[in-house]
Length: 155
Image (cartoon, rainbow, N blue to C red; front, side, top):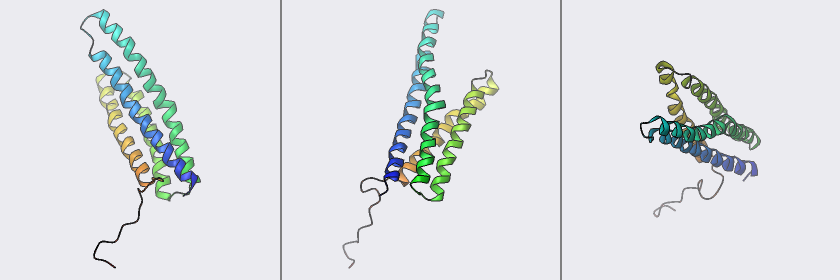
């Protein structure tokens, strides 16, 4: 088993952890604000707390995750994975670019932009789905790719 394929698996799992962290951070930001009492002091304090989580969400989403995906792309070529895997890994980077643009548009203010920005959450699900699929299909450890065992009646 190629060491680069194992590295692809490890970096893929790291990416999935980073994506889970993104969901955690944005939920923490939103819940801090949504849970505030209906007065100016509490709402202001809640936004200060929420902004910390939202800021981390932005850093992870604009720096950490794209760098992780670029490493995955390089590893997919280094490990000589199938062309389909290379293409889908590169497509993952394309989804992250779209994700960034949806986040920028969605935070522009106004109902129309918020409706478009809401696609940011749906695109995130596509990113998680493709990432999980790539990790599962290219798993380089354990019995995940074991050969089928003959049935009891076969010779």
